[in-house]
Amino acid sequence: MQEVQRFNKVLKSSVLLGDLILLNLLLWGLEMVLGDRFWCRECGSVFQGMALLSLCYLLCNMHSGVILHRPVVRTEQIMFRVLRNMVPFVLLSICVLTLFHFHFSYSRFFGLFYIILIIVIISYRLIFRHALELYRRKGNNVRKVILVGSHDNMQELYHAMTDDPTSGYRVLGYFEDFPSDRYPIGVPYLGQPKEVSVYLEKYTGEVDQLYCSLPSARSAEILPVINYCENHLVRFFSVPNVRNYLKRRMYFELLGNVPVLSIRREPLELLENRIVKRVFDIVCSGLFLCTAFPFIYIIVGIAIKMSSPGPIFFKQKRSGEDGREFWCYKFRSMKVNALCDTLQATEHDPRKTKIGEILRKTSIDELPQFINVLKGDMSIVGPRPHMLKHTVEYSQLINKFMVRHFVKPGITGWAQVTGYRGETKELWQMEGRVMRDIWYIEHWTFLLDLYIMYKTVYNAIHGEKTAY
Image (tube, rainbow, N blue to C red; front, top):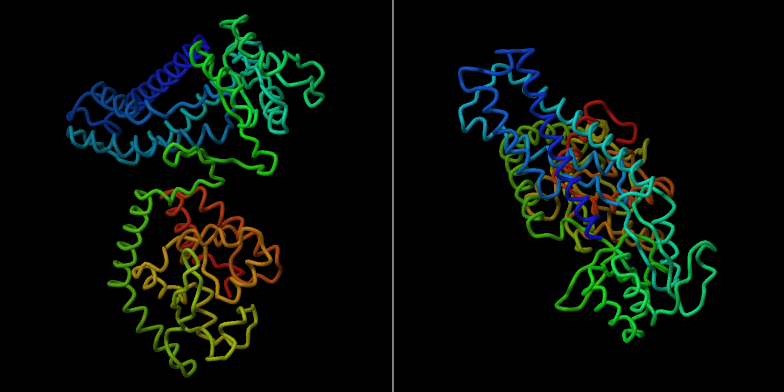
Protein backbone atom coordinates (compact mmCIF):
# COMPACT_ATOMS: atom_id res chain seq x y z
CA MET A 1 0.00 0.00 0.00
CA GLN A 2 2.82 2.37 0.83
CA GLU A 3 4.29 1.75 -2.63
CA VAL A 4 0.95 2.65 -4.24
CA GLN A 5 0.67 5.82 -2.14
CA ARG A 6 4.22 6.84 -3.03
CA PHE A 7 3.54 6.11 -6.70
CA ASN A 8 0.41 8.27 -6.63
CA LYS A 9 2.27 11.15 -4.99
CA VAL A 10 4.98 10.96 -7.64
CA LEU A 11 2.30 10.74 -10.33
CA LYS A 12 0.50 13.86 -9.06
CA SER A 13 3.78 15.76 -8.84
CA SER A 14 4.70 14.63 -12.36
CA VAL A 15 1.37 15.80 -13.75
CA LEU A 16 1.75 19.23 -12.13
CA LEU A 17 5.33 19.49 -13.36
CA GLY A 18 4.16 18.66 -16.88
CA ASP A 19 1.43 21.31 -16.60
CA LEU A 20 4.02 23.93 -15.60
CA ILE A 21 6.35 22.95 -18.44
CA LEU A 22 3.51 23.26 -20.97
CA LEU A 23 2.39 26.58 -19.46
CA ASN A 24 5.88 28.08 -19.72
CA LEU A 25 6.56 26.67 -23.17
CA LEU A 26 3.28 28.12 -24.42
CA LEU A 27 4.00 31.53 -22.87
CA TRP A 28 7.52 31.58 -24.27
CA GLY A 29 6.34 30.37 -27.69
CA LEU A 30 3.67 33.08 -28.02
CA GLU A 31 6.19 35.70 -26.92
CA MET A 32 8.62 34.49 -29.61
CA VAL A 33 5.97 34.46 -32.34
CA LEU A 34 4.00 37.61 -31.46
CA GLY A 35 6.68 39.67 -29.71
CA ASP A 36 5.49 43.06 -28.45
CA ARG A 37 2.00 42.33 -29.71
CA PHE A 38 1.71 39.77 -26.90
CA TRP A 39 4.17 40.73 -24.15
CA CYS A 40 5.29 44.23 -23.22
CA ARG A 41 9.06 43.85 -22.62
CA GLU A 42 9.34 47.33 -21.09
CA CYS A 43 7.21 46.22 -18.12
CA GLY A 44 9.21 43.09 -17.32
CA SER A 45 10.80 40.06 -18.92
CA VAL A 46 8.75 37.11 -20.04
CA PHE A 47 10.76 34.95 -17.61
CA GLN A 48 9.49 37.03 -14.68
CA GLY A 49 5.99 36.50 -16.01
CA MET A 50 6.65 32.75 -16.23
CA ALA A 51 7.66 32.66 -12.56
CA LEU A 52 4.56 34.55 -11.43
CA LEU A 53 2.18 32.50 -13.59
CA SER A 54 3.78 29.24 -12.41
CA LEU A 55 3.32 30.27 -8.79
CA CYS A 56 -0.34 31.18 -9.40
CA TYR A 57 -0.92 27.86 -11.17
CA LEU A 58 0.58 25.86 -8.32
CA LEU A 59 -1.52 27.71 -5.74
CA CYS A 60 -4.71 26.91 -7.66
CA ASN A 61 -3.87 23.26 -8.45
CA MET A 62 -1.70 21.97 -5.61
CA HIS A 63 -4.54 20.85 -3.35
CA SER A 64 -7.13 19.29 -5.68
CA GLY A 65 -5.96 19.89 -9.23
CA VAL A 66 -5.05 16.29 -10.12
CA ILE A 67 -7.40 13.28 -10.07
CA LEU A 68 -5.71 11.08 -12.68
CA HIS A 69 -4.42 8.66 -10.03
CA ARG A 70 -7.89 7.67 -8.83
CA PRO A 71 -8.87 4.07 -9.58
CA VAL A 72 -11.99 5.09 -11.49
CA VAL A 73 -12.21 8.49 -13.17
CA ARG A 74 -14.17 9.47 -16.27
CA THR A 75 -12.98 11.66 -19.12
CA GLU A 76 -15.50 14.39 -18.33
CA GLN A 77 -14.35 14.45 -14.70
CA ILE A 78 -10.78 15.16 -15.80
CA MET A 79 -11.95 17.92 -18.14
CA PHE A 80 -14.19 19.48 -15.52
CA ARG A 81 -11.42 19.45 -12.90
CA VAL A 82 -9.11 21.33 -15.29
CA LEU A 83 -11.81 23.90 -16.08
CA ARG A 84 -12.76 24.28 -12.41
CA ASN A 85 -9.19 25.08 -11.41
CA MET A 86 -8.54 27.29 -14.42
CA VAL A 87 -11.14 29.83 -13.32
CA PRO A 88 -9.34 30.87 -10.10
CA PHE A 89 -5.98 30.60 -11.92
CA VAL A 90 -7.04 33.06 -14.62
CA LEU A 91 -8.45 35.53 -12.08
CA LEU A 92 -5.47 35.24 -9.71
CA SER A 93 -2.85 35.49 -12.47
CA ILE A 94 -4.44 38.61 -13.98
CA CYS A 95 -4.57 40.25 -10.55
CA VAL A 96 -0.95 39.32 -9.75
CA LEU A 97 0.42 40.44 -13.14
CA THR A 98 -1.47 43.72 -12.83
CA LEU A 99 -0.20 44.20 -9.28
CA PHE A 100 3.39 43.82 -10.51
CA HIS A 101 2.71 46.27 -13.37
CA PHE A 102 2.77 43.80 -16.24
CA HIS A 103 0.76 45.29 -19.10
CA PHE A 104 -0.39 43.38 -22.14
CA SER A 105 -0.09 45.00 -25.54
CA TYR A 106 -3.14 43.18 -26.89
CA SER A 107 -5.40 41.63 -24.29
CA ARG A 108 -7.05 39.43 -26.94
CA PHE A 109 -3.73 37.62 -27.45
CA PHE A 110 -3.42 37.03 -23.73
CA GLY A 111 -6.98 35.71 -23.72
CA LEU A 112 -5.89 33.39 -26.54
CA PHE A 113 -3.06 32.19 -24.29
CA TYR A 114 -5.55 31.08 -21.62
CA ILE A 115 -7.80 29.34 -24.15
CA ILE A 116 -4.91 27.44 -25.75
CA LEU A 117 -3.55 26.57 -22.29
CA ILE A 118 -6.86 24.98 -21.26
CA ILE A 119 -6.96 22.88 -24.46
CA VAL A 120 -3.32 21.83 -24.07
CA ILE A 121 -3.67 20.90 -20.36
CA ILE A 122 -6.84 18.87 -20.97
CA SER A 123 -5.22 17.02 -23.90
CA TYR A 124 -2.05 16.36 -21.88
CA ARG A 125 -3.96 14.98 -18.90
CA LEU A 126 -6.16 12.73 -21.03
CA ILE A 127 -3.04 11.29 -22.68
CA PHE A 128 -1.43 10.85 -19.26
CA ARG A 129 -4.52 9.04 -17.97
CA HIS A 130 -4.53 6.74 -21.00
CA ALA A 131 -0.87 5.89 -20.37
CA LEU A 132 -1.65 5.15 -16.71
CA GLU A 133 -4.49 2.84 -17.73
CA LEU A 134 -2.14 0.92 -20.04
CA TYR A 135 0.36 0.68 -17.17
CA ARG A 136 -2.30 -0.69 -14.82
CA ARG A 137 -3.59 -3.10 -17.45
CA LYS A 138 -0.19 -4.78 -17.25
CA GLY A 139 -0.65 -5.32 -13.50
CA ASN A 140 1.26 -2.35 -12.14
CA ASN A 141 0.11 0.28 -9.60
CA VAL A 142 -2.65 -1.98 -8.26
CA ARG A 143 -4.30 -2.13 -4.83
CA LYS A 144 -4.55 -5.68 -3.47
CA VAL A 145 -7.98 -6.12 -1.88
CA ILE A 146 -9.85 -8.70 0.19
CA LEU A 147 -13.63 -8.67 0.69
CA VAL A 148 -15.49 -9.71 3.85
CA GLY A 149 -19.15 -10.60 3.20
CA SER A 150 -21.11 -11.46 0.07
CA HIS A 151 -24.18 -9.24 0.09
CA ASP A 152 -25.53 -7.76 -3.13
CA ASN A 153 -23.57 -4.56 -2.63
CA MET A 154 -20.33 -6.53 -2.24
CA GLN A 155 -20.97 -8.29 -5.54
CA GLU A 156 -21.52 -4.93 -7.18
CA LEU A 157 -18.33 -3.63 -5.55
CA TYR A 158 -16.42 -6.65 -6.83
CA HIS A 159 -17.54 -6.02 -10.40
CA ALA A 160 -16.74 -2.30 -10.11
CA MET A 161 -13.20 -3.25 -9.13
CA THR A 162 -12.59 -6.03 -11.63
CA ASP A 163 -14.69 -5.43 -14.76
CA ASP A 164 -12.31 -2.68 -15.86
CA PRO A 165 -8.69 -3.93 -15.72
CA THR A 166 -7.47 -0.32 -15.70
CA SER A 167 -9.17 0.49 -12.38
CA GLY A 168 -6.08 -0.47 -10.39
CA TYR A 169 -7.68 -3.11 -8.10
CA ARG A 170 -6.84 -6.79 -7.69
CA VAL A 171 -9.21 -8.83 -5.52
CA LEU A 172 -7.28 -11.56 -3.67
CA GLY A 173 -10.43 -13.33 -2.43
CA TYR A 174 -13.32 -13.12 0.02
CA PHE A 175 -14.30 -14.22 3.54
CA GLU A 176 -17.80 -15.48 4.31
CA ASP A 177 -19.43 -17.96 6.67
CA PHE A 178 -19.67 -20.43 3.78
CA PRO A 179 -18.41 -20.43 0.18
CA SER A 180 -20.79 -18.24 -1.82
CA ASP A 181 -22.02 -18.69 -5.37
CA ARG A 182 -22.58 -14.93 -5.58
CA TYR A 183 -18.98 -14.39 -6.63
CA PRO A 184 -17.56 -15.81 -9.87
CA ILE A 185 -16.03 -19.29 -9.59
CA GLY A 186 -12.50 -17.96 -10.03
CA VAL A 187 -12.61 -15.78 -6.90
CA PRO A 188 -10.82 -17.61 -4.05
CA TYR A 189 -12.75 -18.37 -0.86
CA LEU A 190 -10.36 -17.48 1.98
CA GLY A 191 -12.32 -18.66 5.02
CA GLN A 192 -14.76 -17.43 7.65
CA PRO A 193 -14.77 -13.79 8.93
CA LYS A 194 -13.23 -14.85 12.25
CA GLU A 195 -10.15 -15.99 10.31
CA VAL A 196 -9.46 -12.61 8.68
CA SER A 197 -6.86 -11.49 11.24
CA VAL A 198 -5.01 -14.81 10.91
CA TYR A 199 -4.91 -14.40 7.13
CA LEU A 200 -3.68 -10.81 7.37
CA GLU A 201 -0.98 -11.81 9.81
CA LYS A 202 0.14 -14.66 7.54
CA TYR A 203 0.32 -12.36 4.50
CA THR A 204 1.66 -9.24 6.16
CA GLY A 205 2.30 -6.51 3.63
CA GLU A 206 0.45 -8.33 0.84
CA VAL A 207 -2.97 -6.71 1.43
CA ASP A 208 -3.58 -3.01 0.79
CA GLN A 209 -7.30 -2.63 1.45
CA LEU A 210 -10.10 -4.57 3.17
CA TYR A 211 -13.80 -4.03 2.48
CA CYS A 212 -16.27 -5.35 5.05
CA SER A 213 -20.06 -5.62 4.73
CA LEU A 214 -20.82 -7.61 7.89
CA PRO A 215 -23.84 -6.26 9.83
CA SER A 216 -23.21 -4.24 13.00
CA ALA A 217 -24.64 -7.14 15.05
CA ARG A 218 -21.34 -8.92 14.37
CA SER A 219 -19.25 -6.13 15.88
CA ALA A 220 -17.34 -8.67 18.01
CA GLU A 221 -15.85 -10.04 14.77
CA ILE A 222 -15.43 -6.69 13.04
CA LEU A 223 -13.55 -4.77 15.76
CA PRO A 224 -10.50 -7.10 15.89
CA VAL A 225 -10.22 -6.81 12.10
CA ILE A 226 -10.37 -3.01 12.29
CA ASN A 227 -7.73 -2.94 15.02
CA TYR A 228 -5.42 -5.21 13.07
CA CYS A 229 -5.80 -3.14 9.89
CA GLU A 230 -5.15 0.11 11.77
CA ASN A 231 -1.96 -1.29 13.29
CA HIS A 232 -0.58 -2.90 10.12
CA LEU A 233 -1.09 -0.27 7.39
CA VAL A 234 -4.12 -1.94 5.82
CA ARG A 235 -6.91 0.47 4.91
CA PHE A 236 -10.29 -0.67 6.29
CA PHE A 237 -13.56 0.24 4.54
CA SER A 238 -17.04 -0.50 5.84
CA VAL A 239 -19.62 -1.19 3.13
CA PRO A 240 -23.14 -0.48 4.45
CA ASN A 241 -25.91 -2.74 3.25
CA VAL A 242 -28.17 0.10 2.17
CA ARG A 243 -27.19 -0.53 -1.46
CA ASN A 244 -29.72 -3.35 -1.62
CA TYR A 245 -32.53 -0.78 -1.55
CA LEU A 246 -30.80 2.50 -2.48
CA LYS A 247 -29.09 2.26 -5.86
CA ARG A 248 -27.61 5.74 -5.90
CA ARG A 249 -24.68 7.73 -4.60
CA MET A 250 -24.78 8.53 -0.88
CA TYR A 251 -22.78 10.87 1.32
CA PHE A 252 -21.28 10.24 4.73
CA GLU A 253 -21.70 12.74 7.56
CA LEU A 254 -21.23 12.80 11.31
CA LEU A 255 -23.89 14.10 13.68
CA GLY A 256 -21.94 14.29 16.89
CA ASN A 257 -20.26 10.89 16.93
CA VAL A 258 -23.03 9.15 15.04
CA PRO A 259 -22.32 8.26 11.36
CA VAL A 260 -25.14 9.19 9.00
CA LEU A 261 -25.57 8.50 5.29
CA SER A 262 -27.45 11.13 3.31
CA ILE A 263 -28.88 10.27 -0.10
CA ARG A 264 -28.39 13.71 -1.63
CA ARG A 265 -25.69 16.37 -1.40
CA GLU A 266 -27.05 19.86 -1.93
CA PRO A 267 -24.41 22.57 -2.41
CA LEU A 268 -26.93 25.22 -1.34
CA GLU A 269 -27.15 23.63 2.10
CA LEU A 270 -23.79 25.26 2.80
CA LEU A 271 -24.14 28.72 4.30
CA GLU A 272 -21.37 30.24 2.17
CA ASN A 273 -23.09 29.12 -1.05
CA ARG A 274 -26.42 30.50 0.10
CA ILE A 275 -24.76 33.82 0.92
CA VAL A 276 -23.13 34.00 -2.53
CA LYS A 277 -26.43 33.23 -4.27
CA ARG A 278 -28.44 35.64 -2.12
CA VAL A 279 -25.97 38.52 -2.52
CA PHE A 280 -25.98 38.00 -6.28
CA ASP A 281 -29.80 37.96 -6.30
CA ILE A 282 -30.02 41.18 -4.27
CA VAL A 283 -27.45 43.04 -6.37
CA CYS A 284 -28.90 41.97 -9.74
CA SER A 285 -32.56 42.44 -8.82
CA GLY A 286 -31.85 45.75 -7.07
CA LEU A 287 -29.94 47.14 -10.06
CA PHE A 288 -32.61 45.99 -12.51
CA LEU A 289 -35.54 47.34 -10.47
CA CYS A 290 -33.83 50.72 -9.99
CA THR A 291 -32.74 51.21 -13.60
CA ALA A 292 -34.53 49.47 -16.48
CA PHE A 293 -37.68 48.23 -14.76
CA PRO A 294 -39.44 51.62 -14.22
CA PHE A 295 -39.28 52.34 -17.97
CA ILE A 296 -40.43 48.82 -18.83
CA TYR A 297 -43.27 49.14 -16.32
CA ILE A 298 -44.53 52.39 -17.86
CA ILE A 299 -44.40 51.12 -21.46
CA VAL A 300 -45.79 47.65 -20.76
CA GLY A 301 -48.33 49.01 -18.28
CA ILE A 302 -49.82 51.37 -20.85
CA ALA A 303 -49.98 48.57 -23.42
CA ILE A 304 -51.71 46.21 -20.97
CA LYS A 305 -54.28 48.85 -19.95
CA MET A 306 -55.05 49.57 -23.60
CA SER A 307 -55.41 45.89 -24.47
CA SER A 308 -57.98 44.95 -21.81
CA PRO A 309 -59.42 46.23 -18.52
CA GLY A 310 -57.79 45.06 -15.30
CA PRO A 311 -54.59 45.47 -13.26
CA ILE A 312 -51.10 45.73 -14.77
CA PHE A 313 -49.73 43.06 -12.46
CA PHE A 314 -51.11 39.55 -12.20
CA LYS A 315 -50.37 37.89 -8.88
CA GLN A 316 -50.90 34.27 -8.01
CA LYS A 317 -50.08 32.09 -5.02
CA ARG A 318 -47.28 29.67 -5.81
CA SER A 319 -45.34 27.00 -3.91
CA GLY A 320 -41.91 28.17 -2.74
CA GLU A 321 -38.96 26.91 -0.72
CA ASP A 322 -39.91 24.22 1.81
CA GLY A 323 -43.47 24.33 0.43
CA ARG A 324 -44.17 27.85 1.71
CA GLU A 325 -46.76 29.78 -0.27
CA PHE A 326 -45.99 33.23 -1.69
CA TRP A 327 -47.51 35.74 -4.08
CA CYS A 328 -45.76 35.51 -7.46
CA TYR A 329 -45.91 38.63 -9.64
CA LYS A 330 -46.14 38.82 -13.44
CA PHE A 331 -47.25 41.33 -16.04
CA ARG A 332 -50.86 40.44 -16.84
CA SER A 333 -50.98 38.72 -20.22
CA MET A 334 -54.59 37.50 -20.13
CA LYS A 335 -58.02 38.92 -19.73
CA VAL A 336 -59.25 38.79 -16.16
CA ASN A 337 -60.80 35.32 -15.81
CA ALA A 338 -61.97 32.90 -13.12
CA LEU A 339 -59.76 30.02 -14.31
CA CYS A 340 -56.38 31.73 -13.83
CA ASP A 341 -55.57 29.77 -10.67
CA THR A 342 -56.56 26.35 -11.98
CA LEU A 343 -56.01 26.22 -15.78
CA GLN A 344 -52.52 26.35 -17.32
CA ALA A 345 -51.99 28.58 -20.37
CA THR A 346 -52.09 26.75 -23.72
CA GLU A 347 -50.65 27.62 -27.14
CA HIS A 348 -53.85 29.10 -28.59
CA ASP A 349 -55.42 30.15 -25.31
CA PRO A 350 -58.37 32.52 -26.01
CA ARG A 351 -57.77 34.23 -22.66
CA LYS A 352 -54.49 35.78 -23.86
CA THR A 353 -54.51 39.36 -25.09
CA LYS A 354 -52.57 40.50 -28.14
CA ILE A 355 -49.98 42.30 -26.04
CA GLY A 356 -49.96 39.29 -23.71
CA GLU A 357 -48.92 37.06 -26.60
CA ILE A 358 -45.88 39.26 -27.17
CA LEU A 359 -45.07 39.46 -23.47
CA ARG A 360 -45.07 35.68 -23.17
CA LYS A 361 -43.07 35.11 -26.36
CA THR A 362 -40.33 37.46 -25.14
CA SER A 363 -40.59 36.42 -21.45
CA ILE A 364 -41.15 40.08 -20.51
CA ASP A 365 -44.19 38.99 -18.48
CA GLU A 366 -41.77 37.33 -16.00
CA LEU A 367 -39.79 40.51 -15.22
CA PRO A 368 -41.89 41.60 -12.18
CA GLN A 369 -40.62 38.45 -10.46
CA PHE A 370 -37.43 40.42 -9.75
CA ILE A 371 -39.58 41.96 -7.00
CA ASN A 372 -40.03 38.43 -5.59
CA VAL A 373 -36.27 37.94 -5.84
CA LEU A 374 -35.55 41.14 -3.91
CA LYS A 375 -38.12 40.15 -1.26
CA GLY A 376 -36.44 36.75 -0.86
CA ASP A 377 -39.36 34.61 -2.06
CA MET A 378 -37.50 33.61 -5.23
CA SER A 379 -34.04 33.47 -6.76
CA ILE A 380 -33.01 34.49 -10.26
CA VAL A 381 -32.19 30.85 -11.04
CA GLY A 382 -34.01 27.86 -9.60
CA PRO A 383 -36.90 25.46 -10.27
CA ARG A 384 -39.92 27.31 -11.64
CA PRO A 385 -42.71 27.73 -9.04
CA HIS A 386 -46.03 26.06 -9.78
CA MET A 387 -49.55 27.11 -8.88
CA LEU A 388 -50.81 25.45 -5.70
CA LYS A 389 -53.24 23.19 -7.56
CA HIS A 390 -50.43 21.71 -9.67
CA THR A 391 -48.21 21.17 -6.62
CA VAL A 392 -50.94 19.09 -4.97
CA GLU A 393 -51.65 17.10 -8.16
CA TYR A 394 -48.09 16.41 -9.30
CA SER A 395 -46.80 15.57 -5.82
CA GLN A 396 -49.15 12.57 -5.90
CA LEU A 397 -48.35 11.57 -9.48
CA ILE A 398 -44.57 12.09 -9.75
CA ASN A 399 -42.00 10.50 -7.47
CA LYS A 400 -39.67 13.05 -5.80
CA PHE A 401 -41.66 16.01 -7.13
CA MET A 402 -41.38 17.81 -3.78
CA VAL A 403 -37.55 17.60 -3.80
CA ARG A 404 -37.53 20.64 -6.09
CA HIS A 405 -38.90 22.67 -3.15
CA PHE A 406 -35.68 22.24 -1.15
CA VAL A 407 -34.42 25.48 -2.74
CA LYS A 408 -35.98 28.80 -3.69
CA PRO A 409 -37.88 28.81 -6.98
CA GLY A 410 -36.39 30.84 -9.82
CA ILE A 411 -37.34 33.18 -12.64
CA THR A 412 -35.53 30.75 -14.91
CA GLY A 413 -34.04 27.32 -14.38
CA TRP A 414 -32.09 24.40 -15.79
CA ALA A 415 -35.25 22.67 -16.98
CA GLN A 416 -36.36 25.78 -18.87
CA VAL A 417 -33.11 26.18 -20.82
CA THR A 418 -32.91 22.46 -21.68
CA GLY A 419 -36.24 22.17 -23.46
CA TYR A 420 -38.79 21.84 -20.66
CA ARG A 421 -40.37 25.27 -20.67
CA GLY A 422 -44.05 26.11 -21.00
CA GLU A 423 -47.14 23.92 -21.03
CA THR A 424 -46.88 20.33 -19.76
CA LYS A 425 -49.47 18.50 -21.84
CA GLU A 426 -48.35 15.03 -20.77
CA LEU A 427 -47.03 13.63 -17.52
CA TRP A 428 -43.62 12.69 -18.98
CA GLN A 429 -42.95 16.38 -19.69
CA MET A 430 -43.37 17.27 -16.03
CA GLU A 431 -41.30 14.24 -15.04
CA GLY A 432 -38.51 15.51 -17.28
CA ARG A 433 -38.75 18.95 -15.71
CA VAL A 434 -38.59 17.52 -12.19
CA MET A 435 -35.60 15.35 -13.09
CA ARG A 436 -33.70 18.40 -14.37
CA ASP A 437 -34.68 20.50 -11.37
CA ILE A 438 -33.30 17.83 -9.02
CA TRP A 439 -30.11 17.65 -11.11
CA TYR A 440 -29.72 21.42 -10.69
CA ILE A 441 -30.19 21.19 -6.91
CA GLU A 442 -27.52 18.48 -6.66
CA HIS A 443 -25.02 20.16 -9.01
CA TRP A 444 -25.44 23.86 -8.22
CA THR A 445 -22.50 26.16 -8.80
CA PHE A 446 -22.35 29.90 -9.25
CA LEU A 447 -20.99 29.36 -12.78
CA LEU A 448 -23.96 27.11 -13.59
CA ASP A 449 -26.31 29.94 -12.57
CA LEU A 450 -24.47 32.34 -14.87
CA TYR A 451 -24.69 29.84 -17.73
CA ILE A 452 -28.44 29.37 -17.21
CA MET A 453 -28.93 33.15 -17.22
CA TYR A 454 -26.95 33.41 -20.46
CA LYS A 455 -28.99 30.62 -22.08
CA THR A 456 -32.22 32.26 -20.94
CA VAL A 457 -31.30 35.57 -22.60
CA TYR A 458 -30.07 33.74 -25.71
CA ASN A 459 -33.31 31.76 -26.02
CA ALA A 460 -35.42 34.88 -25.43
CA ILE A 461 -33.63 36.72 -28.26
CA HIS A 462 -33.81 33.81 -30.69
CA GLY A 463 -37.32 32.81 -29.66
CA GLU A 464 -38.74 29.56 -28.29
CA LYS A 465 -41.61 27.47 -29.66
CA THR A 466 -42.83 26.64 -26.14
CA ALA A 467 -42.93 30.28 -25.01
CA TYR A 468 -46.70 30.89 -25.01
